[in-house]
Amino acid sequence: MDGTIKPDVVIVGSGVGGGAVARQLAGSGAKVLILERGDFLPNEPENSDAEAVFVQARYRTREEYQDESGRRYRPGQYYYVGGHTKFYGTAMFRFRESDFRDVAHEDGTSPAWPFSYAELEPWYDAAERLFGVHGQAGEDPAEPPRSAGYAHAAVPHEPIIADMVDRLKGQGLRPFSMPSAVDFGPGGSCRRCGTCDAFACRYGAKGDGETRLIRPILAHPDVTLWTNAQVTRLIPASDGRITAVEVVRDGQTLRVEAPLFVLSAGAINSALVLLRSASESNPEGLANRSGVVGRYLMNHHLTGLMGLMPFRVNDTKFPKTLSVNDFYHGLPGDAAARGNMQMLGNIQGPMIRSTYSWMPRALANLLGRHSVDWLCMSEDLPRAESRVRLLRGDRVEIAYHPGDVAAHDRFVRHVRAQLRNIFPVVLRHSFGIEAPSHQCGTVRMGDDPARSALDALCQSHDHRNLYVVDASFFPSSAALNPALTVCAQALRVGAHLRDAWRNGTFAA
Image (cartoon, rainbow, N blue to C red; front, side, top):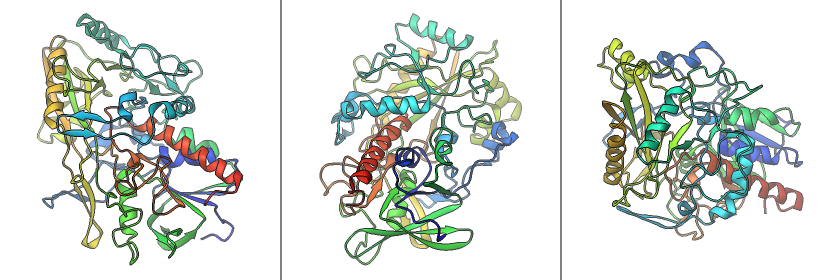
């Protein structure tokens, strides 16, 4: 390690979790070293080129995972400063009050979190303000209590989306303005360029982990960022404390020591780091006395619906302004079939061909121009058999067995029927674990160390100077985009660590 850097805390990962903790610690007096396995994403024309992003998979990792059958694939993992939010669709939802409690589902129970919505609510408000979330309080029929409204007005609907709002209201639904983290409005940098969801923003307008968390603190003298620095394992001492991380950087393997470590590499990779850290005293990996590390992988049930308009071109530039939560707690007469409905970014021909390679280019482009695109999201249940495993030769296996599949299918069929009142044809496509954009649950939190890896502040039950702060801590997945909840909890954990530093109990 560079001899001039003697960190007090090492943060592994620069996404929403690690970035928010770093943001809280900046200025506390603690010296923070952030380790990011990727680099800054280059600002280039290919950022907004669907052919480059989807068909060529220009920005996706080249590593491979495999499923239980041995089939290998390149996962939808993106390693850049800011993490997956560089490519997310700006959706910033709060989970509902019920999402923090035990909830019975058709295939099992979604377990309670070790804290309530009320405890996290002030941090939700802080996260919304930090990310510049636009929204309108009081519209969402399932909205949880708020201590304050949004600081920024909702992004207005473009004409076709406004027409969707009217048509949905005509069916008795209550569509609302989707909360969106985008720098929109007078003086804002958003240009409604037409490529936002699943693309990187060339103008810095997307509220992502880089622009909102990492960039603002890089000038601070106590914050250092190492890019192209992949952490392979954590190194424990005989007393259970973590003493160092092993980092591969510029072809060299380095050992970085510190009093405190925050692992925020994403649900799959945080689990892999802990499993790779197995030793004689920790044969199943670190933080894994309970045996839950790598297990209970969740990813949401995600189904895309394309409503076709044969005689009208969809010229919407920023469609992610509309959502529907009328069915969040169940369909009429079918409480098990439940979920959220929201707009997808505009589907383009290359996106379709990247999945359906047999489709002629002209047909894919035609479908993209004449469709309005929706996403149905339902809660995935935590199952022990859904897991991340390390095989011989450091091969990664993802065994995924989602729960409540039938209930999600009924929810999608109901939504599709609603949309058929608007469109003559509604096509359907399901997203699987190959695109783990909502990965969570692999290092779950809980009050019982025998059944969880972390406590309510994401501190390891087994290693008191280790925190795991990304969506891996989720005991359940809810049915809403996870980024805001990760940020809110990370701000909460970061504030705890900042106070501990000032009180002299930082790594106690």
